[in-house]
Image (cartoon, rainbow, N blue to C red; front, side, top):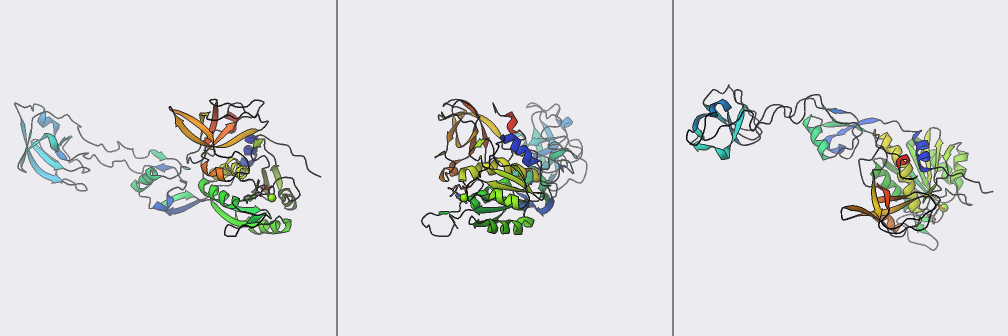
Length: 424
Ligand code: AMP
Ligand code: MG
């Protein structure tokens, strides 16, 4: 007998998943290996930046009071008493009537309160400079702490480490960086029609593209995929694989066999493993036959075998779980608004998630479906950079209408949940 499934709304499904979070764990990696990883601690400035008053230009450090009356008619002459290169310090206090030649990045000598740029002084040999205008106190000085003060919070835990954060980490002496451990995500494809990637095509068969697509999505989300390849539609074989490997992963994903047909094994193996099904149908297209279950405290996702549906199921339900384990609250995709570049006239009782392409026309985001908009389409996924969200309802959508979309490649994410989407 075919079971009757109750669809739940997307945000409700996400909430159910997020009630079973993975706890973030820390590890330490060398500075450059931390690029793209999630920072595990709040980063505070352990000293002011710059750590001392310094010169932003090549020029002369002076006492501004010496130049108060300087003019073209009454030039001021200062005696050059030394030179400071970047990394060096001048060893005494500068007195009235003196100047010190100074290079970009060098510490301002005691007694000086301004720098005159090389270009505006006349040099008389290396001994003397002539100034024909007055210089204000504090001119051309990069002050200690002007970039950041000691003790300031400069980056938050959960931030994805990019070059700007690498600069902060290097500035404060982190040759090793505390990052959140990447969760390990098992990926198993089921289906007797599946061939391995290296195998030759045979009648009735297709290559297992989902396992690798999902593995790549796992990587993009910041986790480590453990790919188990494919198994035929054989309950015992799938059960054996899952029971064997469950200890080795934080989350298990299967693709294929999640529906209610004769060879759909997902409901069966959740039963046999005494799992608790959180949902097995979501009010969305594609991906309505997405299953999430908890097996002894670990999450198992049974994603559809249809590539488009599988792709969407991962992004919506698995990615936030991974993001949470990486210590961020911005677990959802960044959202924005744009106008439809094509008609979607067929109304749908379920929310539609169209894999799409984003263009810019007259300063406006315009959204186009990428290729064949069918859940079974695999080729058009390559173009997908956004999900166009068409709310469920009794009407269709016309070109030019404003809709929400989600960014798939964005690293920052958003805290905003599906609840806030227009007319959901
Ligand atoms: P299923 O969810 O098992 O009913 O499969 C739905 C559709 O997706 C069928 O056309 C399958 O052949 C196809 N499919 C299932 N698994 C994969 C896979 N790993 N890679 C590519 N296509 C698949
Ligand atoms: Mg199948």
